[in-house]
Length: 392
Image (tube, rainbow, N blue to C red; front, side, top):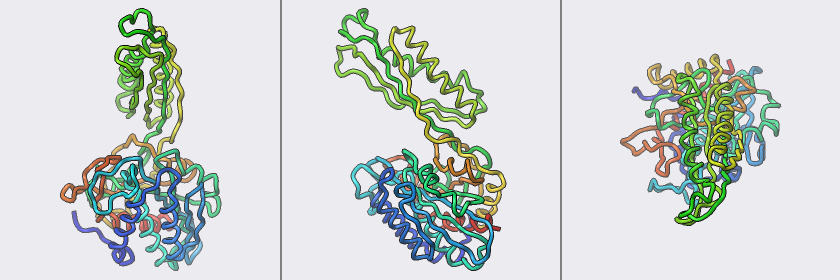
């Protein structure tokens, strides 16, 4: 692919964007405990001339930049939190916080968002409207977007459009993924407690074995997608945790299962959640155990407005060329930017960061996750240009 077309305001920041990303990477915060990163974001915005409000949604930061002419308002978002993953990249800037790392690239999002903030500030006099920068905690859970909305994020000024991006190791460096319509899944969590009757492993006839029932549940839950959902509508049911027993020769009284349901369509979501309950009731009855299910909704489907997505794609083409803008594949991960996009038309897009020659190919949430840092100015440029296009 041809080299990206960067404005002088962004190109001059390339080395500093790497510095910011690595500084954030060394000191990851989890959930709402992102105080260090939030301070860095606030200081970066203030030094560029933005008005700043801190402590929004606990530890979120909101910046406001008013252009030289009246006009629309556009919001862009960066998430700040890391993951409970012990880093194994061996990089000299590896996490200094035991058991935590930026395994999903939010450190890069902070750097790119600050790079865009500086570039937009340099162009302030010609901007027709107002820009809002949203630095959000707890995207990985329990969710920071809703608390920020409740604290007035979308009230004054009220955005007319909103965008966010995610670095993406499923796309090569130099590419931008954009898609209209649903792009990320609704995410739901379920927990199943199977209660039977324990006893001696040599006398199973005297028990109601919750482990056998749990095993049947794991298998039966896989039929929800394969037999109840249209094959042209993406969906996932995954059991990610099973816990039962402490001794090899004892049948326990209880077993617990934890899992997730991912869907893109409301009717599919309803079918899957109802199906979990129905399967639990049936297997509970047939195995003489009680199955109690608790559903916890997380994030709704992330839906891109077609008109906003088209403008983001145009802005990206000015940076990476038309050939570098690809139709983003559907992703069944979840994203709480979805709450913002429920209220404001917008676009969530992806910045390619994979480069095997630089060791940047591990999947997201991996202990070896890393990115090609040449993507940082690309992401900053696309963010800034997309904001400008949406202000027009």
